[in-house]
Length: 375
Image (cartoon, rainbow, N blue to C red; front, side):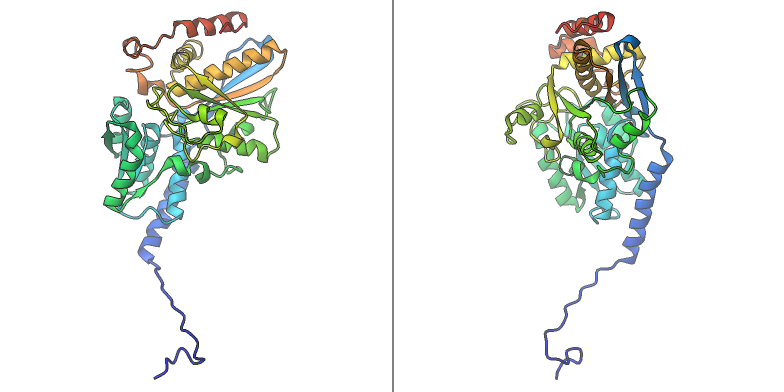
């Protein structure tokens, strides 16, 4: 007997409807909660670093430590959650898993708790105790590995075993954020500089962990047709600088970065070399000397990644001053130093690591006192 739905004799339409009213209701509420978090949060501050007025150069720090979870990664985590939710990757009751050395995991644990799913952070065993405690405070679980290079495969395996979602910040950071605007970090910086004497900065200095922030900054300034240049500062034991200079995207490092949150042993998929104008390779001693200098002159204690960017920004200030140029620069205060009291603010840890900061401190002190960069 002929199929009454196929009166013309043609092949029947195959129709599979996977609509799930309960899931869609959960999804709508989850997206609402994540968007409401952004709506509740005021913009982060743009702090002036004290330089002599007569230099005609203004240096600002975008203070990302004022986010609810205390770091720049709060923006990234929010974007990643919205991206994954709208792609249908996060499901009720299933864990979100991330490879993170700390700050991203803290922020993702916060958003996982907000939407009501479990969170597992896969991280090196050397991650600071303060960061582990903050992840657990936000309701997350920490899965520690001995070899930092295995965090990717362990995260993917745990997601497969549990039916959860591996967030994979290192792949999706550059695409989850709307680089054209939507109050991303670049749009925020330009809005806050609008009434300053140099509203379009000559340079924005960032650091790279995933590469997502530098990609957003670089794309935005090009899209808006600004003349601002983007500099990325890279710490020791990181491959971003080497890959950017050589063009070899397969370079690897044998050791992990001692500056938590930035630097990677491989070139991450979210790192966009073409969006960057300049890179600097910064010694770890210089990064730590810079955050200690920041505390002395501004009264703000920050993490090591802030020091990596600040050292590079001050080098550019010295360069501009020597050339008789005026203008402004922006770098990032990425997270608070209270998370690193047993590391970057511990002389004992510096001695154990063989890190000498005195020569770099002398360079900074001499520059801020007399305007000459001797290093």
